[in-house]
Image 1: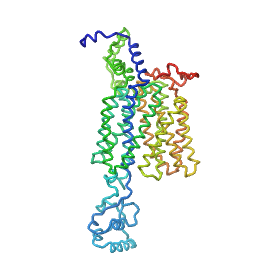
Image 2 (image 1 turned 135 degrees about the horizontal axis):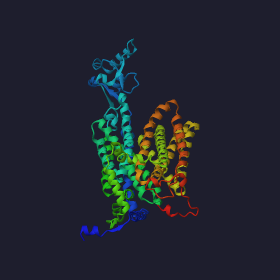
Image 3 (image 1 turned 60 degrees about the vertical axis):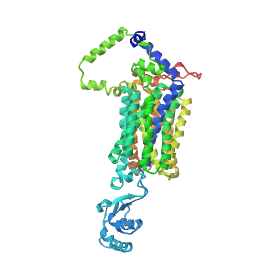
Image 4 (image 1 turned 90 degrees about the vertical axis):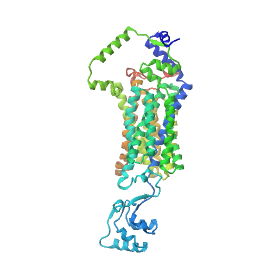
Length: 574
């Protein structure tokens, strides 16, 4: 049979029937089997890579334990390093950033004992030497671990120390930009398109960070890693939520989030074994090449295709064969197409084109009062969750442990925090579980005010445990609140507000923390508590199907009643 004859032999059916056939089969294969497990594996593995790079700052950019100013004029002497530092630094307390303004050419002609006597006499005189910056005498900073951190390679200390912080700031800015951009791209062009573009940026940025000889280009690579991590995370997470049945959706979405701390544990192990930051960066970059296989094997989200009325493509993915159906063109469809063609012929302004193009999904987030209330509440929950997560992480950094152990402990603490929501969601709905964890976390952070000083770090880690558990449910809950046509845009813009919180966290800790050690945790505790109360305005999503259109979004008063018999209705199936 030729291709033309095969096209002619297709069965004509109504669009509603076509959609029902594809949707029913998606619900069937989404309840378990090869489709579900393949999708889960392909989506969860990239998030382990996110745990590598996004958390690598602590181990790639740590401050060396010791540094000093190397003055070239003293290179010709036979003094030991300790003797040189004694003469150069004198009674300064800047650890090599500033030195004494001696005549080093004169000192280089003396023995150490002679130079020591000379400098002591000068310090006791009426005109002691001034302190000057190390490079003013042609000196340069040396480190005890020159290969272990990029701080040593680019001398990001002293007056350039703020540039060290930029390495983490650029990751946060990248995530801020990427979460918004990739979210809209995923809704407009597809989940796989967004995922593939994120994977490309991720691979390129990883190797830029590995091989660049310039710090500014290194920052560009860090920005790309942050942006790409958002593109990978939210596209993959959305595909799991959209195409897996309710029975597996809860634990799979939380297990997806739990893969992030697994990456952190691997990062700690790798950094302990590899002492050079360049080789460590390369070790973290090579696994990113596996994303090529993910992009090749991953299919487009069938539910997104259904929403875009691309039923033939969805049919091919779900049934693993070409569709033998064709939509029957009714008078209503013909009339709609005619109106659409007439609208396209009408001249439109640039603003209208922008509204109907790049900003269409974003504008849809504020289209109705119900969606507007959901999105504003979600923005606040994400911002508060991220702010509290990073504030508790910064407060807990006072633990007297090695950096390797600290990163590993952080990952280990996060894993059980993702198990708790699975247990809670098994017996409760999304709304009561989210409210409970928010209020519990807020209470724990506020209790820091009345706890003895010995318990502060413990409660900081408890707060991290609680907010990690809350964060995983908030992400799942938010994905279920919004219809398919704007789901990724909602998650993307929510993530943007989350990174407003993560960018603000260090300033709250450093600036407000100087005014009072309790202020950062008190702010977070109050905000988290308010977020818990705001969840009252959200509808329950665990007992209803995912909506596809904005018109189908339920309100808190439209919640489906849960059967007291313990049996699930047909609506509980997906």
